[in-house]
Length: 138
Image: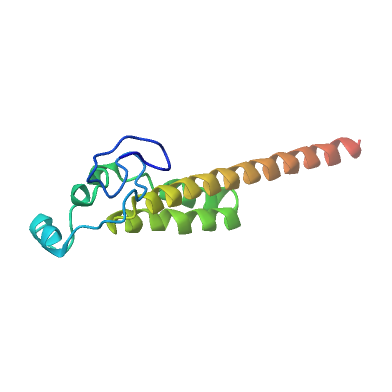
């Protein structure tokens, strides 16, 4: 079966793409399959492999540290948006929403970099403005 999003080849029984996590089939695991494949802590939760999601160690990075640093040092509004998306990554991944986790990770990274860029630009403009004022007084 081929993924409609990334065109990767997947097993015919796959529900989600092993490469990008996109749902490729409408079939979902039966309750019996989930219970027999579940973990000891929560027998009703199937492991990632059982529903066709990539291995649990492939959680996308959440960029929370970058988001916090951006908020504190560069640009508060963009940093807060980045923190919100960063906080969603692990929860979505744990819920089995691999594509949503990847999307939240990408948005957290984007907003952190935008905040860094805006903070850097404002800092440079401030320095240039102070230099122009200092040169204008002489």
